[in-house]
Every structure is written in C-alpha cells, then in structure tokens.
Amino acid sequence: MQALEDASEKVCECGTCGNLDLADPCGICTGSKRDRSILCVVEDVADLWALERAQVFRGLYHVLGGVLSALDGVGPEDLNIASLVERAKAPELNEVILAMNATVDGQTTAHYVCDRLKGQNVTVSRLAHGVPVGGELDYLDDGTLQTALKARRPL
Image 1 (cartoon, rainbow, N blue to C red):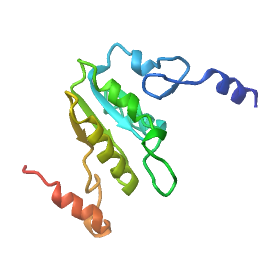
Image 2: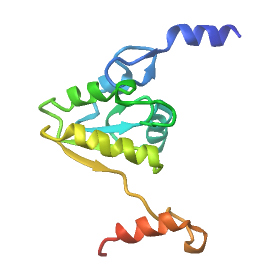
Image 3: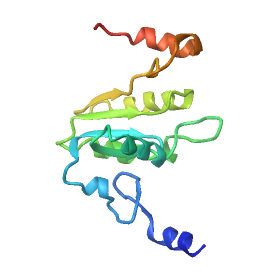
Image 4: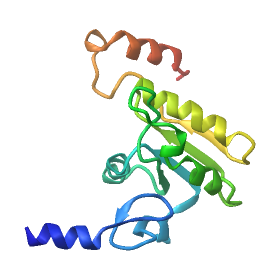
C-alpha cells in the first residue's frame, strides 16, 4: 500500500506531451536521441507506452487525453488539442502522425485534429489500417476488409 502512495506522489504529468513520468518534462521529451522533427499524437498514455514497448517510433509524442465523443460529452476543449496546435508551430517539426484508434470517435478526433493543423507548416499523416500481420481474410470484419482494399499499394 505504501508503494502505491509513494508512486502517486512521485509520478507527474509531463507539461509538454502529457506522458506520465517522475520528471517534468519527461524522459522522452528530454531524450537526446529523439527525432524532434516527428510528433506522434495518441489518445492516451497507454497508447504511448504501447508504441514505446514495440520500439518502433523514435520521435516525440503528444497525448490528447481521450477522444471527441458527443455521447460522452467530450468536446475539443476537454482534450489537449490547443497545446498540440502550439507545438506544431515549432520550426524543427516536419510531420505529425495521428495514431488514433480505428473507432468512430478515434477517426472523428483524427479528422478534427487534421483540420486544426491546417495552415501549419507540417505534413499530417495517420497510421495505416487494414489486414493485421498474421490475419486471415475469412476472419476479418467487413470494415477492415474495405479499408485494406482502399489502402492497397503496389509491390
């Protein structure tokens, strides 16, 4: 029980990206080996940690703190979108990757954020969607198959 209390006292939210760490700014934001030209936008800290665990991204992050949801009463002012737009003004930033979940709310949020980033001098991209590695077509839902076909590319 004491360990949990100690952790809750020491862990803080990074004022730059929204990650949880023992320092503000966090170790990712201050990391000298990070590519500062790429910013990956995620819904929550668990998504950031999943990407870090996979060791597939070496840029910086921005945690929105959720997704837009009319049903749940979550609007743009409830998310860290304004601070993202400010970060996008950094001259060294070239690309913003929208890594939202492939849900209706996730994609709605991605479209909204993309609109808010128009006029900034950054390329906005998103994660690919479609057939997962090891996936079998006969087990996939119609939406996944449709998205995979639309996003096909030449070999």
